[in-house]
Image (cartoon, rainbow, N blue to C red; front, side, top):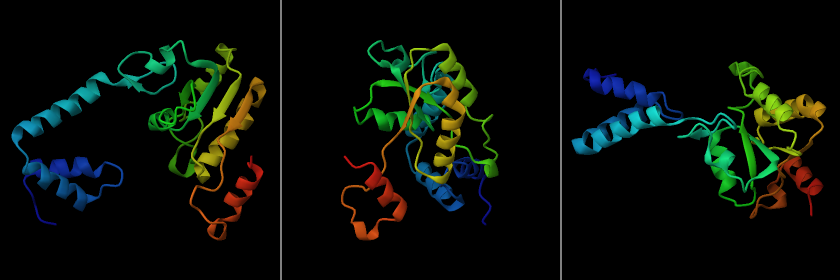
Length: 198
């Protein structure tokens, strides 16, 4: 690969650390930025610094916030009897956009994947248990992990670990998406759709 000036090489290396961005894409980003006005680059740089300085993790649900406790956890209108367990903070935004859930959240910080070194002690499972012991008003735990192998493994693990807390545990419904045909549906998805029919 051609040798570039150090500032270009350093920024390519930084962009390459982003998920889904390889060296070629990173280099395209850098060359695009080099064509932008310096004021735009300064604004972007300040925005990145501000991100690191002002965004912190909510002490209650572990989502990203500018406050010690996020807006959702502080909102007295939220249903405190329901706790939705999600993988990442971005999942909260997705669920909130549906306007179908008005309870509180708990962010695990990922899913179980022993091959990648993500074991139960890496995720916020200990904090979830402590929260359930402290807050006896929680009646339902909604497990809202992605329907991947890791997500399913995490939800099965949580169901086993949290069974002693005596709360109702539910999972998001699964099945056929709108526009799908039965001919191309796999057996597991079709079986879930049949079990979850209404």
